[in-house]
Length: 471
Image (cartoon, rainbow, N blue to C red; front, top):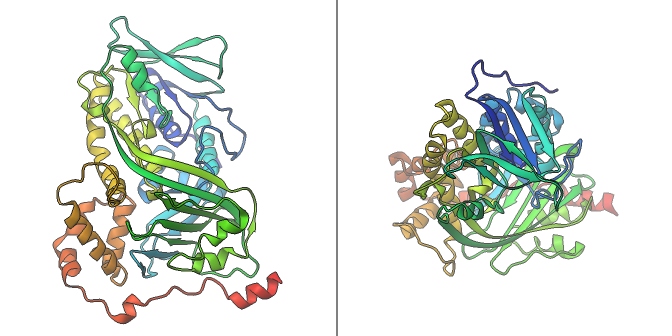
């Protein structure tokens, strides 16, 4: 199934160009197709005709989930996208009904909340997005081309296009555009190119993470029986430094990711990879995966720091340019906010364009300062709990952590607290709802029973049956 998005009757401009063909770039191109007569998407990699991993997405083999807020945005841009993704193999995971979830030292109640984690491989998600984008009559995809710099007006006050060529060399060409969108990721060269044009260097905030995570695809173990689609064992920061997660994705395979912080490194050998989960605070993932059959190699991704480029603070910035996605702000991937935040950035850019092309870059940058503040705070608050991590702690940091720890304990036996927390995680509510008078009273006065604190999940399968079939 593939449908195209109806075009607006009166576009704002003639041509927009997006460079970077990952999720943020694909979504931005879809948004801008409603506001420009033509949109060109430029990508350095060659796109395959199917869900294949790409060199330009080094984290592409790891767990990627689209949050409810992100899916809602995608369905506005590409009507019917949710159904199309499901048809392609995505698994819709109710965050509390289908998720065996150990967090804050306790298991969460298994009560459906109606908010979903859309689980599939990253290549599958990008492939479905590309297919929808290519179906739009006013979108052209130029893959196998890299952008080498900006074309500007004579006074350098406006970006008017880009120079591009084949990767590694070849003859350059220039593509002119009224709006250029940088979706090239963390390695974006926009800061250097702007500096070369005489603009000040963009201010950056970097918060150390030092997380290494590795992932592997598995066939379901023999005799596998479970009433969950995802299981996660999250650490209690900062004392624990290991995490493990498995989820069901397309083709009924299991994708497993394990991670370690600040010197804890997941092993890369077959036996050590699974053994890493054996000594965690809960053994359930080890019990599931020790009989599973690997379907590919172990993929490793190292993430050193959160990175936020404060383009919104620059006193001068050229018109006709808009960074999106990781080119603007890159979060610790453990928290799963990146793709949804990129979708919200693209949506906001479209709203700014709808108000007119004059001043669009300034309006967009100003709104990004506000939009990015919440996901940035949500990601970095956890990372800053490690005492040796450098970075300015916000006012009330210790009190916020104290409250958060008590809230997590409440969420282990109070469904209202759990579902409220999930709405914040899914970015459909602001974190301020966690401090509502009703919930704050519960947090401060809750006294969980022994039964609440001893709750165990249902066994993921019958171990005896598995061992018998595996013999």
